[in-house]
Amino acid sequence: MSEPINLQAWRRDAHDFEREIARAVVGQERAIRLLTVAVFARGHVLLEGDVGVGKTTLLRAVARALGGAYERIEGTIDLMPSDMIYHTFLNEDGKPRVDPGPVLRHGSDLSIFFFNEINRARPQVHSLLLRLMAERSITAFNQEHYFPNLLVFADRNRIEREETFELPAAARDRFLMEVGIATPTDSAARRDLLFETKFHDVDALISSLKEGVIDYRRINALAKVIQSTIVVSPVLETYVLDLWTAIREPAKAGIDIPNVDITRLIAGGASPRGMSYLIRAARVQAWLSGRDMVVPEDIREIFSECMAHRIFLAPVYELRRDDIIRSLIGGVFAKVPAP
Image (cartoon, rainbow, N blue to C red; front, side, top):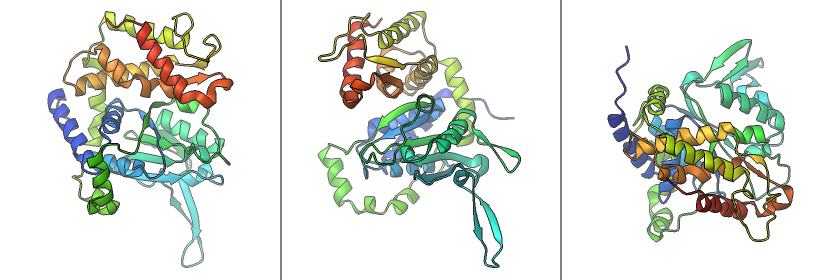
């Protein structure tokens, strides 16, 4: 019989989890908090950032602190769905052999799966990943394989557009958040990254972290307790519904963005699933902040990361997407009064 969930004790463990990750990744406090929210909300994450900013190091640190297995696969134009499940080769006797691929290799112990440059992979690969994210299971070798502890992380190459396939709406909507990983601006963090030798050997750095700060096998049970315990008041429910209306119908909300026809701006998105993910994340954010109920600040803290990637703009505005989404979300909070 498993021991009961103590939310206060688990919150201390969650803060220890954040501090352990911060030992390996400097200047990314907000990203670490958002990934911690995703871990305890059991949500998959898109990562956004330039090459070499530490996305892989961050995820390896998360996997180390969780104690589960970590796997990574590179998105390429010739990647096949089967490459995620198994790979074939000739052994030393010249006979064909089949070994488990990155998804199957660790079974139910797989806790972090990182798909690097996901938009370089073809839609057939996206389809398999979509099922893995939605059901945490796949069928292989006439058998169903389950991954109850799995979280999927993926990043997109937004610089090199040749031979890329944009994620379809259904796949983007499966991600709880899109989290930006930027080059640190703090001078002390930049100095550490350049001149502190421990950051130059990533393998040794990750090995120096404490393994299993939190037990990845118990997080599913904890997540259910968080969602059933942290309260959302009727007043806050109304506030979130008003935000949802405003983000879907910005013209009716009175939002104005320079050089944008606000009546034609939104092509779709902000789905019911996306809003339910927002509430899941807000409950975790409230719990991490030591509260037993969600307040407007919790919504504001994670709103952009939970909603921006699932808002679809008219094609004419996509080249200005980042600036427009920032203005749109700012306008929504300016027009919808907080309780």
